[in-house]
Length: 127
Image (cartoon, rainbow, N blue to C red; front, side, top):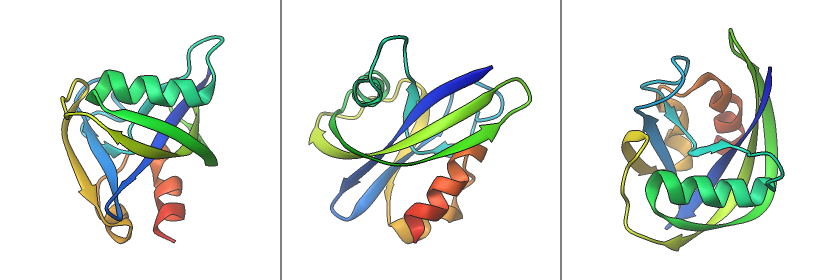
């Protein structure tokens, strides 16, 4: 089973947003990630990332451009994680699927226990 998932690279004051999963698949539970979610049928990837960030954090963002992807095989599915650079527009943080969030320096991203699919993207971001 292949699933297309979008992830947001949200920048604010030279920092990027990461969040720790509190719900969902056992492969990512308790792991840090670049926030995002599944693309629905007949939905553009740009719309999906804006919708997911609004649902999960109540934040408004604008998808600016596709950056790169990583295909990660988990025991029960294959995830095509597609990273988009996004503009932070505003909103008050409310966590729905995560236990915490942080704005971090790019150079710090690999210091966190990241979800497997996010690691290659994090390496790219760090460079």
